Amino acid sequence: MTIRTGLGYDLHRLVAGRKLIIGGVHIPFELGEDGHSDGDVLLHAITDALLGASALGDIGEFFPPGDPQWKDADSAQLLGAAWQKVSGAGWKIQNIDCVIALQKPKFLPWRSAVRESVAAILGIPTDAVFVKAKTGEGLGAVGTSEAVEVWASCLITRE
Ligand code: MG
Image (cartoon, rainbow, N blue to C red; front, side):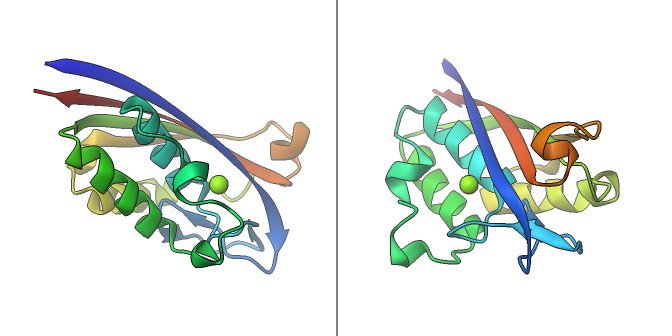
């Protein structure tokens, strides 16, 4: 069996007039992710982790930010398309673990819904997906709610 790990990172500006969408879940808040697509920072990082682990490319290559096709795109569809390529190459996901850096709002009440949403997009068990949240301790772009960041790791295997 071949075992691979993957790492993905993403950052989006938080701005007024946009929805805060994390892992396909709309979290009510006064700010949301700016971006060409829906800006789902968690799904973007997971997409890159899976593409990186399988050495198939990266999210910018598959879904160029300037391409009108992906304007306001549902990132669940982007992740689904990337996962089709990765799974089509014979890979299975063992687990995905993530850290989200977000000053506000509190993430913990949303964690179960987010884990279930990500698992459903990928067709894997909910216990194969975890997300931990950190604030920016009031420092830097995260601490002032100017940005949200995510690091995602994955482990994939192939027989
Ligand atoms: Mg992004």
